[in-house]
Each structure stands twice: as structure tokens, then as C-alpha cells.
Length: 259
Image 1 (cartoon, rainbow, N blue to C red):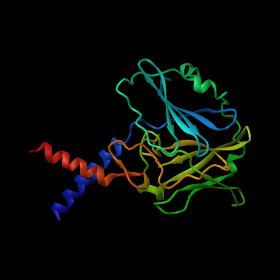
Image 2 (image 1 turned 45 degrees about the horizontal axis):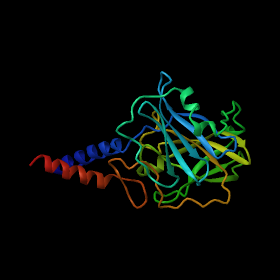
Image 3 (image 1 turned 90 degrees about the vertical axis):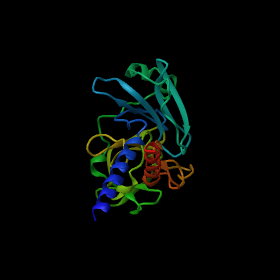
Image 4 (image 1 turned 90 degrees about the horizontal axis):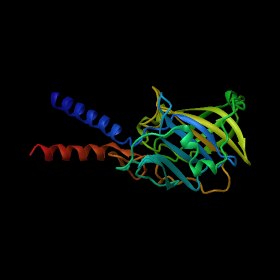
């Protein structure tokens, strides 16, 4: 019994370390705005002093690319990654922070013709959202219901976690809240706060925000796409963090270091 307990504590400790290690970048904590045509949303990781460690340009549908803006060699650097692909976000020459003024001067941001989120929630307070289907391994979508409990939209999530890995093991605790509804260009946009979805999320609920457009004719997200940052934890065939593989690697490393 004692041997089993010790093994459980070791595995639990390694799992915690693996979850932490998969965080390349903390998830963003501020929605700066979206493009005038509604195709991209600009989000940033803002410190209490107002400095920005990195920003993200994320598509509002599953199409095109996602962009990570970091500071490299003392200047903002834009990295483009296909919407369904994983990326390596930390570079040896990455250091420092940027101001919001510097971020807004990045050519890719200027080209967006940025629209700041309106104060009005656009009727979001009357809506409810939940993840479907209700099972762990699936291509989850957000089902939006009105005050009469009628489904008014089903939204594929274009980008799940970006700088960290998916907490798929806690899928039963995932939550979603519609905080704004807006129109940009020809698109209807839903601003969604998703809780307990990403290991690098914010606050006690580990929340992230996503701006998601009602789908059009674009390809629907495949189940095998990237849903987060690999880091130490390895992306499995479902592209979620495989803690078991990470634990096995740590065990092998510990065993080798003890020889």
C-alpha cells in the first residue's frame, strides 16, 4: 500500500511539472480589438504595469494563419503560423517587453484597421454557451443559446490554447460565457470567455478569451489539428498534451542522472 502511495505521489508531482512545462507563453489576458473586416482579433499579455510580453493575431474562423508578436533583438517580431499548426514561440534572442503604442505601430496591426470592443455587450447577457459534444475526445464546438433556450449558433473554435497546452483531462469542468456580440464587415462576432481550458490561462478559472465568427464556407477544423503548445508535454494524436509520455521522459531523465 505504501509503495502504491509513493508511486502515486511521484506521478502526480511529475504530472504537475509536465503541465507547467508545457507553457511556452502565458495565455493572453486582454482583448485589444479586431480588424475592421472581422477576420482577425488582436489580443495581448499585459502586465500590471502596462507592459506587453507578447501579442497574438488570431483568425475568427478556421482559415489563414495565426500570428505571434514578441520582442526579439529589442524590436517587435511577427511570427506567422498556419491556423492548424503548432509553433515554437520562444527564441534565444527573445527578451524585453513592448508598449501598447509599439504594438499598435506593428505593420500587421496597422493593416487591420483596428476596431476596439464596444462598451455595449450587444445582447450577450441574454445568451448562454456550452461545449458540445459532451465527451473528452472530439472536435468540440460552442453551442450558443438564446433566452428561450433555442440554439442560435454553433461555433467551431479556430484557435484553442496557443502558448500552453489543452486541459483536456478536465473537459467536464470547461465553461464558456458570451461577453459581447458585435458585427464587423459581414461577420457576426461572439467574444467568448472560456474557463479551465488551457494550462496557461488567467486567474483562478484559468480563462482565455476568443473572438469567434459565425462559420461561413471555410473548411471545418479537423480533429487532428494542433490545439496548444507542446513544450515538455507531447502532443498526442488528438493534439492534446500527453502527460503520460512526458512523465515517461522525466522518469528516463531522472534514472539517467542517478547513474
